[in-house]
Amino acid sequence: MDNTVLITVLVAVFIASMAGYLIYLQRRLVIYEKQQTKVASTLPLQAYERLLLLTDRIALPNLINRNTANAISAIELQVLYTKIIREEFDFNVTQQMYINPASWKAVKNLKEKNLQIINQIGLQLPADATGLDLQKAIMQYLVSNPSAALHDLVSEALSYEAKQLL
Image (cartoon, rainbow, N blue to C red; front, side):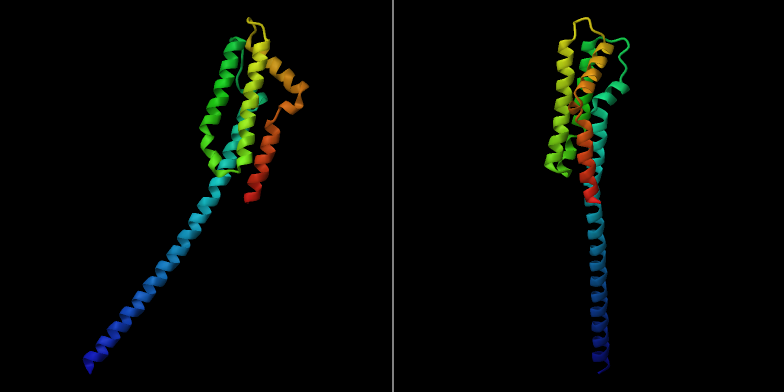
């Protein structure tokens, strides 16, 4: 009889320890799932943040302010602006997987519109134009055509969507 009681107690202790271990594993799984959900929700926010920065960096007035055109020709500056915009865009292209497709299309359209403005104005300038001439012509175009400056509109749309995630 003593062996039966001992075996029964050992089996009960074993079953209780297994149940406790299973409860422990379940709690760890719940904590892990919460952490994964938190990480998954931060990725879209970070994508919107990066794309807002991209929008700001490729905005034509900001591009002009950051890159002086003292000693280069209009053609060289046109090539430089085109290169900067494309590199900035290419660096952030993977962010499209975290955001609304319409927002990505707006960012892409901003890039294309800015490249189009730079290239069209560059073609209108004389061959001996300076970089300052190109900068002035771009700024004059933006002042005379406020709807051409899409960066504010795209930034507002991205900000609105990012706030919806909070």
